[in-house]
Length: 530
Image: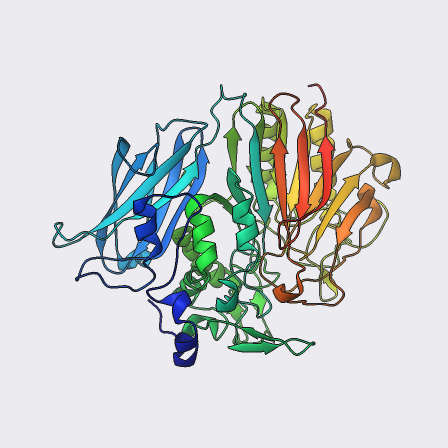
Protein backbone atom coordinates (compact mmCIF):
# COMPACT_ATOMS: atom_id res chain seq x y z
CA UNK A 1 0.00 0.00 0.00
CA UNK A 2 1.41 3.36 -0.93
CA UNK A 3 2.08 5.90 1.76
CA UNK A 4 -0.73 8.36 2.42
CA UNK A 5 -0.53 11.97 3.50
CA UNK A 6 -1.10 11.86 7.27
CA UNK A 7 -3.74 14.60 7.45
CA UNK A 8 -5.59 13.14 4.47
CA UNK A 9 -5.37 9.69 6.04
CA UNK A 10 -6.85 10.92 9.31
CA UNK A 11 -9.68 12.76 7.57
CA UNK A 12 -10.40 9.91 5.16
CA UNK A 13 -10.20 6.89 7.46
CA UNK A 14 -13.67 5.68 6.52
CA UNK A 15 -12.63 5.61 2.87
CA UNK A 16 -9.20 4.00 3.03
CA UNK A 17 -8.96 1.86 6.14
CA UNK A 18 -11.01 -0.91 7.70
CA UNK A 19 -14.21 0.81 6.66
CA UNK A 20 -13.42 0.90 2.91
CA UNK A 21 -16.63 -0.71 1.70
CA UNK A 22 -17.13 -2.88 -1.33
CA UNK A 23 -20.87 -3.13 -0.68
CA UNK A 24 -22.11 -4.63 -3.96
CA UNK A 25 -25.78 -4.25 -4.80
CA UNK A 26 -26.25 -8.02 -4.83
CA UNK A 27 -26.32 -9.76 -1.47
CA UNK A 28 -24.84 -12.74 0.34
CA UNK A 29 -22.87 -13.43 3.49
CA UNK A 30 -19.67 -13.70 1.45
CA UNK A 31 -20.32 -10.33 -0.12
CA UNK A 32 -21.08 -8.82 3.25
CA UNK A 33 -17.71 -10.07 4.50
CA UNK A 34 -16.05 -8.56 1.43
CA UNK A 35 -17.60 -5.22 2.26
CA UNK A 36 -15.84 -5.06 5.62
CA UNK A 37 -12.33 -5.23 4.22
CA UNK A 38 -10.28 -2.55 2.57
CA UNK A 39 -6.75 -1.81 1.36
CA UNK A 40 -3.99 -2.77 3.74
CA UNK A 41 -6.11 -4.57 6.33
CA UNK A 42 -4.05 -7.34 7.99
CA UNK A 43 -5.74 -10.64 8.84
CA UNK A 44 -3.57 -12.75 11.19
CA UNK A 45 -0.49 -12.61 8.95
CA UNK A 46 -2.41 -13.94 6.00
CA UNK A 47 -2.26 -12.45 2.50
CA UNK A 48 -4.67 -9.59 1.85
CA UNK A 49 -6.30 -8.61 -1.43
CA UNK A 50 -5.52 -4.90 -1.31
CA UNK A 51 -7.38 -3.11 -4.11
CA UNK A 52 -10.56 -5.01 -4.80
CA UNK A 53 -11.36 -7.25 -7.75
CA UNK A 54 -12.30 -6.76 -11.39
CA UNK A 55 -13.65 -8.77 -14.31
CA UNK A 56 -12.63 -7.78 -17.83
CA UNK A 57 -13.68 -8.67 -21.38
CA UNK A 58 -16.46 -11.04 -20.30
CA UNK A 59 -17.51 -12.44 -23.69
CA UNK A 60 -18.73 -15.74 -25.11
CA UNK A 61 -17.86 -17.98 -22.16
CA UNK A 62 -14.56 -16.34 -21.20
CA UNK A 63 -13.44 -13.68 -18.73
CA UNK A 64 -10.24 -12.18 -17.30
CA UNK A 65 -10.34 -11.75 -13.51
CA UNK A 66 -8.02 -9.42 -11.61
CA UNK A 67 -6.83 -8.61 -8.12
CA UNK A 68 -3.80 -7.36 -6.20
CA UNK A 69 -2.28 -8.89 -3.08
CA UNK A 70 0.00 -7.49 -0.37
CA UNK A 71 2.79 -10.09 -0.78
CA UNK A 72 3.85 -12.82 -3.23
CA UNK A 73 0.95 -15.28 -3.29
CA UNK A 74 -0.75 -17.82 -5.55
CA UNK A 75 -4.17 -16.72 -6.76
CA UNK A 76 -7.22 -18.94 -7.11
CA UNK A 77 -10.73 -18.22 -8.35
CA UNK A 78 -13.99 -20.09 -7.94
CA UNK A 79 -16.98 -19.34 -10.16
CA UNK A 80 -20.62 -20.18 -9.43
CA UNK A 81 -24.10 -19.29 -10.59
CA UNK A 82 -25.19 -18.10 -7.13
CA UNK A 83 -23.53 -15.80 -4.58
CA UNK A 84 -23.59 -18.51 -1.90
CA UNK A 85 -21.26 -20.71 -4.02
CA UNK A 86 -23.21 -23.87 -3.18
CA UNK A 87 -22.28 -25.33 -6.54
CA UNK A 88 -18.91 -24.39 -7.98
CA UNK A 89 -18.82 -24.31 -11.78
CA UNK A 90 -15.09 -23.76 -12.08
CA UNK A 91 -12.15 -23.64 -9.73
CA UNK A 92 -9.02 -22.32 -11.41
CA UNK A 93 -5.52 -21.88 -10.07
CA UNK A 94 -4.10 -18.59 -11.23
CA UNK A 95 -0.60 -17.17 -11.37
CA UNK A 96 1.61 -16.24 -8.47
CA UNK A 97 1.46 -12.48 -7.99
CA UNK A 98 5.00 -11.18 -7.58
CA UNK A 99 6.73 -7.80 -7.35
CA UNK A 100 7.48 -8.07 -11.09
CA UNK A 101 3.80 -7.23 -11.73
CA UNK A 102 3.45 -5.02 -8.65
CA UNK A 103 1.73 -7.98 -6.94
CA UNK A 104 -1.17 -7.89 -9.39
CA UNK A 105 -2.46 -10.95 -11.19
CA UNK A 106 -5.01 -11.92 -13.83
CA UNK A 107 -6.76 -15.26 -14.18
CA UNK A 108 -8.13 -16.05 -17.63
CA UNK A 109 -11.07 -18.46 -17.53
CA UNK A 110 -12.77 -20.08 -20.51
CA UNK A 111 -15.58 -22.57 -21.04
CA UNK A 112 -18.15 -20.70 -18.93
CA UNK A 113 -21.91 -20.46 -19.49
CA UNK A 114 -23.08 -17.51 -21.55
CA UNK A 115 -25.95 -15.04 -21.15
CA UNK A 116 -26.17 -15.30 -17.37
CA UNK A 117 -24.92 -13.70 -14.16
CA UNK A 118 -21.91 -15.47 -12.66
CA UNK A 119 -20.26 -14.91 -9.28
CA UNK A 120 -16.56 -15.23 -8.62
CA UNK A 121 -14.51 -15.59 -5.46
CA UNK A 122 -10.79 -14.85 -5.44
CA UNK A 123 -8.34 -15.92 -2.74
CA UNK A 124 -4.56 -15.79 -2.45
CA UNK A 125 -2.33 -18.40 -0.75
CA UNK A 126 0.98 -17.37 0.78
CA UNK A 127 3.87 -18.27 -1.49
CA UNK A 128 5.74 -20.10 1.27
CA UNK A 129 2.85 -21.53 3.28
CA UNK A 130 -0.23 -22.44 1.25
CA UNK A 131 -2.18 -23.09 4.45
CA UNK A 132 -2.23 -19.34 4.97
CA UNK A 133 -4.83 -18.01 2.54
CA UNK A 134 -6.47 -14.65 2.33
CA UNK A 135 -10.07 -13.98 3.10
CA UNK A 136 -11.94 -14.08 -0.23
CA UNK A 137 -13.30 -11.17 -2.16
CA UNK A 138 -16.51 -11.87 -4.07
CA UNK A 139 -17.79 -10.22 -7.22
CA UNK A 140 -20.17 -10.68 -10.10
CA UNK A 141 -19.99 -10.35 -13.85
CA UNK A 142 -22.59 -10.82 -16.53
CA UNK A 143 -21.37 -13.45 -18.93
CA UNK A 144 -21.39 -12.22 -22.51
CA UNK A 145 -23.69 -13.57 -25.16
CA UNK A 146 -22.63 -16.54 -27.25
CA UNK A 147 -23.20 -16.95 -30.95
CA UNK A 148 -26.63 -18.52 -30.34
CA UNK A 149 -27.79 -16.08 -27.64
CA UNK A 150 -29.80 -13.69 -29.76
CA UNK A 151 -32.83 -13.75 -27.46
CA UNK A 152 -31.36 -11.68 -24.61
CA UNK A 153 -31.12 -7.89 -24.66
CA UNK A 154 -27.79 -6.10 -24.39
CA UNK A 155 -27.13 -3.14 -22.14
CA UNK A 156 -23.79 -1.48 -21.61
CA UNK A 157 -22.55 1.93 -20.54
CA UNK A 158 -19.54 3.94 -21.65
CA UNK A 159 -17.57 7.01 -20.64
CA UNK A 160 -14.01 8.07 -19.85
CA UNK A 161 -11.75 10.59 -18.09
CA UNK A 162 -11.21 9.63 -14.44
CA UNK A 163 -9.56 11.83 -11.76
CA UNK A 164 -8.46 14.65 -14.06
CA UNK A 165 -7.81 18.38 -13.67
CA UNK A 166 -7.20 17.97 -9.93
CA UNK A 167 -10.58 16.40 -9.14
CA UNK A 168 -9.57 13.14 -7.48
CA UNK A 169 -10.96 10.62 -5.02
CA UNK A 170 -13.31 12.57 -2.74
CA UNK A 171 -14.11 10.75 0.54
CA UNK A 172 -17.11 13.01 1.14
CA UNK A 173 -18.73 11.57 -2.02
CA UNK A 174 -17.72 7.95 -1.50
CA UNK A 175 -14.95 8.33 -4.05
CA UNK A 176 -16.31 9.28 -7.49
CA UNK A 177 -19.73 10.90 -7.45
CA UNK A 178 -20.95 9.37 -10.71
CA UNK A 179 -20.09 5.77 -9.78
CA UNK A 180 -23.37 5.24 -7.91
CA UNK A 181 -25.48 6.16 -10.94
CA UNK A 182 -23.39 3.94 -13.19
CA UNK A 183 -23.82 1.06 -10.80
CA UNK A 184 -27.59 1.60 -10.72
CA UNK A 185 -27.71 1.20 -14.53
CA UNK A 186 -27.18 -2.56 -14.02
CA UNK A 187 -25.19 -2.82 -17.22
CA UNK A 188 -23.78 -5.95 -18.80
CA UNK A 189 -20.41 -4.22 -18.99
CA UNK A 190 -18.69 -0.84 -18.84
CA UNK A 191 -16.74 0.40 -21.84
CA UNK A 192 -14.00 2.63 -20.46
CA UNK A 193 -13.20 4.93 -23.37
CA UNK A 194 -9.74 6.04 -22.31
CA UNK A 195 -8.06 8.29 -19.76
CA UNK A 196 -8.56 5.57 -17.17
CA UNK A 197 -6.10 7.53 -15.05
CA UNK A 198 -4.52 10.98 -15.20
CA UNK A 199 -0.85 10.12 -14.90
CA UNK A 200 0.02 13.76 -15.62
CA UNK A 201 -2.57 15.14 -13.20
CA UNK A 202 -1.38 15.63 -9.59
CA UNK A 203 -3.95 16.34 -6.89
CA UNK A 204 -3.87 18.50 -3.78
CA UNK A 205 -5.72 18.00 -0.51
CA UNK A 206 -8.31 20.71 -1.16
CA UNK A 207 -9.60 22.82 -4.03
CA UNK A 208 -11.80 25.88 -3.51
CA UNK A 209 -14.65 26.20 -6.02
CA UNK A 210 -15.76 29.61 -7.38
CA UNK A 211 -18.81 29.52 -5.09
CA UNK A 212 -16.63 28.94 -2.02
CA UNK A 213 -17.31 25.23 -1.57
CA UNK A 214 -14.33 23.03 -0.75
CA UNK A 215 -13.47 19.90 -2.71
CA UNK A 216 -11.40 17.37 -0.75
CA UNK A 217 -9.06 14.83 -2.30
CA UNK A 218 -7.42 11.79 -0.86
CA UNK A 219 -3.71 12.13 -1.64
CA UNK A 220 -1.03 9.47 -2.03
CA UNK A 221 2.61 10.04 -2.83
CA UNK A 222 2.28 9.03 -6.50
CA UNK A 223 -0.43 11.66 -7.05
CA UNK A 224 1.66 14.59 -5.82
CA UNK A 225 3.64 14.88 -9.08
CA UNK A 226 3.41 13.82 -12.71
CA UNK A 227 4.18 10.14 -13.31
CA UNK A 228 7.53 9.25 -14.85
CA UNK A 229 8.69 6.01 -13.22
CA UNK A 230 6.95 2.65 -13.52
CA UNK A 231 5.98 2.77 -9.84
CA UNK A 232 4.47 6.23 -10.30
CA UNK A 233 2.37 4.97 -13.22
CA UNK A 234 1.25 2.00 -11.15
CA UNK A 235 0.30 4.39 -8.37
CA UNK A 236 -2.23 6.14 -10.63
CA UNK A 237 -4.31 2.96 -10.83
CA UNK A 238 -3.93 2.19 -7.14
CA UNK A 239 -5.12 5.71 -6.41
CA UNK A 240 -8.38 5.35 -8.34
CA UNK A 241 -9.06 2.07 -6.56
CA UNK A 242 -9.14 3.94 -3.25
CA UNK A 243 -12.59 5.15 -4.27
CA UNK A 244 -15.11 3.04 -2.35
CA UNK A 245 -17.94 3.26 -4.85
CA UNK A 246 -15.63 2.79 -7.84
CA UNK A 247 -14.35 -0.52 -6.47
CA UNK A 248 -17.93 -1.52 -5.70
CA UNK A 249 -18.94 -0.72 -9.27
CA UNK A 250 -16.02 -2.65 -10.76
CA UNK A 251 -16.72 -5.65 -8.52
CA UNK A 252 -20.09 -6.20 -10.17
CA UNK A 253 -19.70 -4.73 -13.66
CA UNK A 254 -17.19 -6.18 -16.12
CA UNK A 255 -14.89 -3.62 -17.74
CA UNK A 256 -13.83 -3.34 -21.38
CA UNK A 257 -10.99 -0.83 -21.48
CA UNK A 258 -9.10 1.12 -24.11
CA UNK A 259 -6.53 3.81 -23.50
CA UNK A 260 -6.05 7.38 -24.68
CA UNK A 261 -3.46 10.01 -23.76
CA UNK A 262 -3.58 10.67 -20.02
CA UNK A 263 -2.53 7.12 -19.19
CA UNK A 264 0.87 8.44 -20.39
CA UNK A 265 0.83 12.24 -20.80
CA UNK A 266 -1.54 14.76 -22.38
CA UNK A 267 -1.71 14.67 -26.20
CA UNK A 268 1.22 12.27 -26.58
CA UNK A 269 2.32 10.56 -29.77
CA UNK A 270 5.14 8.07 -30.53
CA UNK A 271 8.57 9.59 -30.99
CA UNK A 272 7.69 12.78 -29.11
CA UNK A 273 10.47 14.49 -27.13
CA UNK A 274 9.30 16.80 -24.36
CA UNK A 275 10.56 20.36 -24.10
CA UNK A 276 9.12 22.92 -21.70
CA UNK A 277 6.55 20.49 -20.28
CA UNK A 278 5.87 21.17 -16.59
CA UNK A 279 7.26 18.48 -14.31
CA UNK A 280 9.38 16.78 -16.98
CA UNK A 281 13.06 17.33 -17.77
CA UNK A 282 13.68 18.67 -21.26
CA UNK A 283 14.59 15.82 -23.57
CA UNK A 284 12.28 13.28 -21.91
CA UNK A 285 11.37 10.66 -24.51
CA UNK A 286 7.68 9.87 -24.49
CA UNK A 287 8.30 6.37 -25.89
CA UNK A 288 10.00 5.47 -22.60
CA UNK A 289 7.08 6.89 -20.60
CA UNK A 290 4.60 5.07 -22.83
CA UNK A 291 6.34 1.72 -22.28
CA UNK A 292 6.04 2.12 -18.51
CA UNK A 293 2.46 3.35 -18.80
CA UNK A 294 1.50 0.42 -21.05
CA UNK A 295 2.92 -2.04 -18.54
CA UNK A 296 0.94 -0.42 -15.69
CA UNK A 297 -2.24 -0.39 -17.83
CA UNK A 298 -2.00 -4.14 -18.47
CA UNK A 299 -1.06 -4.88 -14.87
CA UNK A 300 -4.05 -3.03 -13.39
CA UNK A 301 -6.85 -3.46 -15.94
CA UNK A 302 -7.98 -6.96 -16.96
CA UNK A 303 -7.74 -7.27 -20.74
CA UNK A 304 -8.32 -10.67 -22.34
CA UNK A 305 -5.45 -12.22 -24.29
CA UNK A 306 -7.56 -12.31 -27.46
CA UNK A 307 -4.94 -10.41 -29.45
CA UNK A 308 -1.58 -10.79 -27.72
CA UNK A 309 1.52 -9.43 -29.41
CA UNK A 310 4.95 -8.27 -28.43
CA UNK A 311 3.84 -4.75 -27.47
CA UNK A 312 0.64 -5.65 -25.61
CA UNK A 313 -1.93 -4.69 -28.20
CA UNK A 314 -4.94 -2.71 -26.98
CA UNK A 315 -7.16 -2.87 -30.07
CA UNK A 316 -9.41 -5.91 -30.35
CA UNK A 317 -12.88 -7.16 -31.31
CA UNK A 318 -15.28 -8.61 -28.75
CA UNK A 319 -18.38 -10.45 -29.98
CA UNK A 320 -21.67 -10.28 -28.08
CA UNK A 321 -23.65 -12.84 -30.00
CA UNK A 322 -25.69 -12.10 -33.14
CA UNK A 323 -26.73 -8.64 -31.92
CA UNK A 324 -23.39 -6.82 -31.60
CA UNK A 325 -19.68 -6.88 -32.27
CA UNK A 326 -17.61 -4.32 -30.37
CA UNK A 327 -14.43 -2.95 -31.97
CA UNK A 328 -12.03 -1.31 -29.52
CA UNK A 329 -9.57 1.00 -31.27
CA UNK A 330 -6.13 2.27 -30.24
CA UNK A 331 -5.57 5.76 -31.62
CA UNK A 332 -2.28 6.29 -29.75
CA UNK A 333 0.23 3.53 -30.43
CA UNK A 334 0.53 4.21 -34.19
CA UNK A 335 -0.30 7.91 -34.14
CA UNK A 336 1.73 10.38 -36.19
CA UNK A 337 2.98 13.70 -34.71
CA UNK A 338 0.47 16.44 -33.98
CA UNK A 339 0.63 19.09 -36.70
CA UNK A 340 -1.73 21.67 -38.16
CA UNK A 341 -3.40 18.75 -39.97
CA UNK A 342 -3.22 20.28 -43.45
CA UNK A 343 -1.05 17.65 -45.14
CA UNK A 344 -2.21 16.51 -48.58
CA UNK A 345 -0.90 12.92 -48.35
CA UNK A 346 -2.37 10.23 -46.10
CA UNK A 347 0.10 8.43 -43.82
CA UNK A 348 -1.95 6.23 -41.48
CA UNK A 349 -2.59 9.17 -39.15
CA UNK A 350 -4.36 7.73 -36.12
CA UNK A 351 -4.72 3.97 -36.56
CA UNK A 352 -1.74 2.94 -38.64
CA UNK A 353 -1.96 0.67 -41.68
CA UNK A 354 -2.04 -2.60 -39.74
CA UNK A 355 -4.92 -1.57 -37.47
CA UNK A 356 -6.86 -0.01 -40.36
CA UNK A 357 -6.61 -3.24 -42.36
CA UNK A 358 -7.60 -5.25 -39.29
CA UNK A 359 -10.66 -3.06 -38.65
CA UNK A 360 -11.94 -3.27 -42.22
CA UNK A 361 -11.32 -7.02 -42.36
CA UNK A 362 -13.17 -7.65 -39.10
CA UNK A 363 -16.03 -5.31 -39.97
CA UNK A 364 -16.52 -7.12 -43.27
CA UNK A 365 -16.45 -10.51 -41.56
CA UNK A 366 -18.91 -9.48 -38.84
CA UNK A 367 -22.31 -11.19 -38.94
CA UNK A 368 -23.65 -9.15 -36.02
CA UNK A 369 -26.54 -6.76 -36.55
CA UNK A 370 -24.67 -3.83 -34.97
CA UNK A 371 -21.01 -2.90 -35.29
CA UNK A 372 -20.13 -0.60 -32.41
CA UNK A 373 -16.77 1.12 -32.82
CA UNK A 374 -15.09 2.54 -29.73
CA UNK A 375 -12.85 5.41 -30.90
CA UNK A 376 -10.89 7.05 -28.11
CA UNK A 377 -10.59 10.26 -30.16
CA UNK A 378 -13.67 11.86 -31.78
CA UNK A 379 -14.02 12.06 -35.55
CA UNK A 380 -15.57 15.46 -36.19
CA UNK A 381 -14.57 17.56 -33.19
CA UNK A 382 -11.59 19.88 -33.36
CA UNK A 383 -9.29 19.03 -30.42
CA UNK A 384 -6.42 21.55 -30.34
CA UNK A 385 -2.91 20.81 -29.11
CA UNK A 386 -1.64 24.36 -28.91
CA UNK A 387 -1.54 25.54 -32.51
CA UNK A 388 -1.62 21.93 -33.75
CA UNK A 389 -4.37 19.34 -33.85
CA UNK A 390 -4.76 16.35 -31.53
CA UNK A 391 -7.54 14.41 -33.25
CA UNK A 392 -8.45 13.89 -36.92
CA UNK A 393 -10.25 17.19 -37.57
CA UNK A 394 -8.24 20.25 -38.49
CA UNK A 395 -10.86 23.01 -38.41
CA UNK A 396 -10.80 23.42 -42.19
CA UNK A 397 -14.35 22.74 -43.49
CA UNK A 398 -13.17 21.76 -46.97
CA UNK A 399 -11.88 18.54 -48.50
CA UNK A 400 -10.04 16.08 -46.24
CA UNK A 401 -6.48 16.99 -45.26
CA UNK A 402 -4.01 15.48 -42.81
CA UNK A 403 -5.52 12.73 -40.67
CA UNK A 404 -8.91 13.43 -42.26
CA UNK A 405 -7.58 11.62 -45.34
CA UNK A 406 -7.29 8.44 -43.31
CA UNK A 407 -10.78 8.84 -41.86
CA UNK A 408 -12.13 9.47 -45.38
CA UNK A 409 -10.48 6.27 -46.63
CA UNK A 410 -11.94 4.29 -43.73
CA UNK A 411 -15.47 5.64 -44.15
CA UNK A 412 -15.41 5.11 -47.91
CA UNK A 413 -14.20 1.53 -47.56
CA UNK A 414 -16.95 0.84 -45.02
CA UNK A 415 -19.48 2.06 -47.60
CA UNK A 416 -17.99 0.11 -50.50
CA UNK A 417 -17.76 -3.10 -48.50
CA UNK A 418 -21.48 -2.81 -47.76
CA UNK A 419 -20.99 -2.62 -44.00
CA UNK A 420 -24.21 -1.47 -42.38
CA UNK A 421 -25.22 -0.36 -38.89
CA UNK A 422 -21.93 1.01 -37.58
CA UNK A 423 -22.15 3.32 -34.56
CA UNK A 424 -19.20 5.20 -33.04
CA UNK A 425 -18.73 5.85 -29.30
CA UNK A 426 -16.12 8.21 -27.89
CA UNK A 427 -15.18 10.38 -24.91
CA UNK A 428 -12.08 12.62 -24.54
CA UNK A 429 -13.63 16.12 -24.75
CA UNK A 430 -15.29 16.19 -21.30
CA UNK A 431 -18.91 16.81 -22.28
CA UNK A 432 -21.69 14.77 -23.83
CA UNK A 433 -23.15 15.06 -27.32
CA UNK A 434 -24.88 13.27 -30.20
CA UNK A 435 -23.44 13.91 -33.66
CA UNK A 436 -25.03 12.78 -36.92
CA UNK A 437 -22.78 12.61 -39.99
CA UNK A 438 -24.52 13.13 -43.33
CA UNK A 439 -22.80 13.25 -46.76
CA UNK A 440 -25.39 15.71 -48.08
CA UNK A 441 -23.98 18.28 -45.61
CA UNK A 442 -20.35 17.34 -46.16
CA UNK A 443 -17.43 18.58 -48.22
CA UNK A 444 -16.44 14.92 -48.63
CA UNK A 445 -19.45 12.80 -49.55
CA UNK A 446 -18.30 9.25 -50.36
CA UNK A 447 -19.64 7.60 -47.19
CA UNK A 448 -22.90 6.43 -45.65
CA UNK A 449 -24.60 8.43 -42.88
CA UNK A 450 -23.71 7.38 -39.33
CA UNK A 451 -23.89 8.48 -35.68
CA UNK A 452 -21.12 9.27 -33.23
CA UNK A 453 -22.02 9.68 -29.56
CA UNK A 454 -19.78 11.44 -27.04
CA UNK A 455 -19.77 11.04 -23.27
CA UNK A 456 -17.67 11.95 -20.25
CA UNK A 457 -16.06 12.97 -18.08
CA UNK A 458 -16.54 10.55 -15.22
CA UNK A 459 -14.60 12.41 -12.54
CA UNK A 460 -12.67 15.26 -14.11
CA UNK A 461 -13.02 18.86 -15.16
CA UNK A 462 -15.91 19.48 -17.58
CA UNK A 463 -15.29 21.53 -20.74
CA UNK A 464 -16.80 22.29 -24.13
CA UNK A 465 -18.26 22.52 -26.56
CA UNK A 466 -15.57 21.92 -29.16
CA UNK A 467 -15.90 23.15 -32.73
CA UNK A 468 -17.39 20.71 -35.24
CA UNK A 469 -15.42 20.40 -38.47
CA UNK A 470 -17.74 20.36 -41.51
CA UNK A 471 -15.63 18.05 -43.69
CA UNK A 472 -17.78 14.98 -42.99
CA UNK A 473 -21.05 16.87 -42.48
CA UNK A 474 -21.64 16.46 -38.73
CA UNK A 475 -24.61 18.01 -36.96
CA UNK A 476 -24.71 18.42 -33.18
CA UNK A 477 -28.19 17.02 -32.57
CA UNK A 478 -27.65 17.33 -28.81
CA UNK A 479 -24.97 18.51 -26.42
CA UNK A 480 -24.72 19.26 -22.70
CA UNK A 481 -21.82 21.45 -21.60
CA UNK A 482 -20.77 23.31 -18.44
CA UNK A 483 -20.99 27.10 -18.05
CA UNK A 484 -17.22 27.36 -17.51
CA UNK A 485 -14.03 25.42 -18.16
CA UNK A 486 -12.93 22.67 -15.74
CA UNK A 487 -16.20 22.63 -13.81
CA UNK A 488 -15.89 20.24 -10.89
CA UNK A 489 -17.91 17.05 -10.32
CA UNK A 490 -19.70 18.93 -7.53
CA UNK A 491 -21.23 21.15 -10.22
CA UNK A 492 -22.81 18.15 -11.89
CA UNK A 493 -21.43 18.19 -15.45
CA UNK A 494 -20.28 14.58 -15.47
CA UNK A 495 -21.80 12.16 -17.97
CA UNK A 496 -22.02 8.59 -19.16
CA UNK A 497 -23.85 6.97 -22.04
CA UNK A 498 -26.01 3.85 -22.11
CA UNK A 499 -26.63 1.54 -25.08
CA UNK A 500 -29.57 -0.90 -25.20
CA UNK A 501 -30.20 -3.40 -28.00
CA UNK A 502 -33.63 -5.04 -28.20
CA UNK A 503 -33.41 -8.68 -29.38
CA UNK A 504 -36.93 -8.59 -30.83
CA UNK A 505 -36.81 -5.39 -32.90
CA UNK A 506 -33.00 -5.28 -33.22
CA UNK A 507 -33.22 -1.56 -32.43
CA UNK A 508 -30.23 0.11 -30.78
CA UNK A 509 -31.04 2.91 -28.34
CA UNK A 510 -28.46 5.37 -27.01
CA UNK A 511 -29.26 7.35 -23.86
CA UNK A 512 -26.96 10.11 -22.62
CA UNK A 513 -27.12 10.43 -18.81
CA UNK A 514 -25.95 12.90 -16.20
CA UNK A 515 -24.12 12.46 -12.91
CA UNK A 516 -27.31 11.33 -11.15
CA UNK A 517 -28.25 8.89 -13.91
CA UNK A 518 -31.01 11.09 -15.36
CA UNK A 519 -31.65 10.68 -19.09
CA UNK A 520 -30.78 13.86 -21.00
CA UNK A 521 -31.16 12.62 -24.57
CA UNK A 522 -32.29 9.42 -26.28
CA UNK A 523 -31.79 8.30 -29.87
CA UNK A 524 -33.33 5.09 -31.19
CA UNK A 525 -31.77 3.58 -34.32
CA UNK A 526 -33.42 1.02 -36.59
CA UNK A 527 -31.09 -1.49 -38.23
CA UNK A 528 -30.69 -1.39 -41.98
CA UNK A 529 -30.87 -4.69 -43.86
CA UNK A 530 -27.53 -6.22 -44.79
